[in-house]
Amino acid sequence: MNQPLSAVTFPDDGCELRIIDQTRLPGALVELALTTLPEMVDAIQSLRVRGAPALGVAGAVGLAVLAERAAIEGPATFDADMATAATALRSARPTAVNLAWAVDRVLAAGQVGGASPTVRATAMRTEASTILNDDIAMCARIGVSGATLLRSGMTVLTHCNAGALATAGIGTALAPIYTLHARGETIRVYANETRPLLQGARLTAWELDRAGVPVTLITDGMAASVMRSGVIDAVLVGADRIAANGDVANKIGTYGVAVLARHHGIPFYVLAPRSTLDPHTPHGDGMEIEMREASEVRAMGGVATAPGHVTVHNPAFDVTPAALVTAIVTDSGVFHPPYHFTA
Ligand code: MRU
Image (cartoon, rainbow, N blue to C red; front, side):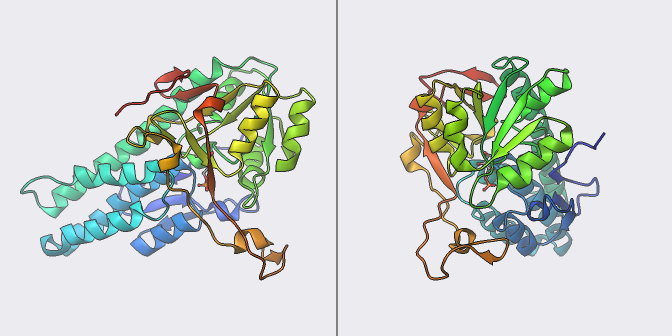
């Protein structure tokens, strides 16, 4: 039996942010210990740590680690160091709201009037640990709530990776699957490979297979015919940001999967912790969608798959309109349309 995965951890001494390097999967399961701001920003931007909840936890723990170090330097530079670090971490990736949300929480926890940097860093460390532990608990609750929408024997389709590797716990979209699997129920998963970076193939298929959950990997273009064949009972996806009206930003390709699900009469469920809700953004048009390097589309594994000069369009996420979402599952329960998320 494999150990549960811990995508982001915070050792008790508070001196480092530990992550599984997801760029090495599925070939190697390697942990990295990050101690400096450039290392943390690079790990986030290069997707060594990724997935909205995991990004939030990494940002929180990262800032707490930097606070411990800044406290040693003394009060003269503490505020400036924390402001610089928070800005860099918060903006390392723009779409997943969890990252800014968690960094701001840890920064605010350090605003202890008149206290020494050491005391302030301790408060920040406590807040980061709370965010990490809350994420684990939220995933578990999403699993229990999401499982009420499924039955033993069902087959679900998922896109990208919203499993343990995308969180500190058992995942979001994959949480109900792990919950039912742990109860001895049979749930089968079709995983879209998720071009261009193959999170579905490299991460979802890997972690489900490792956990003993039956998984079938398909290329993204196969989803339509698989749905038409009648084999898929439900679609489960995660989210990087959910607007007040229920519009959902998630990995590029999710919108197409939602359209296909509607066409085939298959329920389309979005699962995410409350930290992914963005009630201050009224609808999806106001969400910043990260644009990534053309090289991610022109090549795979370092091998050219297109002319080197061809123009590329590479948004990392798309927005699925709330009208296509059958229900949104958070750690507070199952929400049905119309959605009105408030602060
Ligand atoms: O670019 P990534 O890998 O950070 O994308 C995030 C995702 O994996 C998702 O879009 C996911 O479905 C939501 S996060 C649980």
